[in-house]
Length: 295
Ligand SMILES: NC(=O)c1ccc[n+]([C@@H]2O[C@H](COP(=O)([O-])OP(=O)(O)OC[C@H]3O[C@@H](n4cnc5c(N)ncnc54)[C@H](OP(=O)(O)O)[C@@H]3O)[C@@H](O)[C@H]2O)c1
Image (tube, rainbow, N blue to C red; front, side):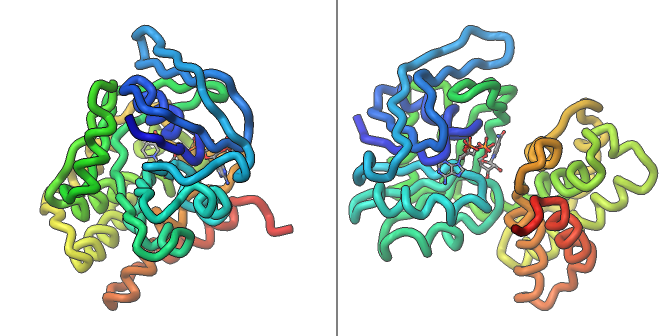
């Protein structure tokens, strides 16, 4: 049994926390709002419910075996206090976020030398109430195949989540970015669900974002195959017309969005490789302008 702290009990935090409780670990949720139980349900199946140990002050947490960082990418700096309190020299920090910069994002907030495990999350899940989530389709996590990655996978043995190692995490992360960069930006900017892909010119915008993402990903070392762009456009066109995504949900709720990790990253990394990314560069200030106004 490991002692695990989950920072950010949102959709992903509650789902992985419930899985770890199912697997028999001691789990503490570091939260901004209280809840007493964590429950997880696959759409159409019975609910699994566990009592939740929730702390709301860094003073009530101490170094754990594992910290699972499940806040959104732009919320990492706000979780710095939790990381300071929960990460000791032996703690391993798993970063369950989208994007391709898991390490860079978290390194400034943990002691030098602490093991950071980037996690690719294939777990479409929605939070229906504090501590309560529903997941759809797949429940998979992927990490690299080093010792820490293998230890991370063992944490989930006996739970509803499958955690697996991959020999090419970089490619997996960029493949995921190829879904998130166009999908998130287009739904957030238009304020419309997936049906918007059937409107004139929208698939072309997606293709232009994908071309930039793939070009930059290649330079970063990701092995993105020739057919990826066509397959992704097809997937957007086939998606349920009322389906959303998390940038869309955040936009509709007036919350800050994860555009830096999904779109600005293409511009940032493109500039390092001398690859022009004019479409992504145009999206970034538009997405930023949708966020809450500066005080
Ligand atoms: N949801 C999915 O289906 C899915 C799938 C794949 C990947 N991902 C990725 O997984 C990551 C997490 O996404 P999510 O959907 O779980 O987001 P989410 O539902 O918004 O959850 C984030 C949680 O972090 C909490 N939080 C933020 N700052 C905090 C702080 N300083 N201290 C404590 N808690 C804090 C939020 O608290 P409040 O409740 O107070 O706002 C919220 O509960 C993102 O990178 C996302 O892109 C999500």
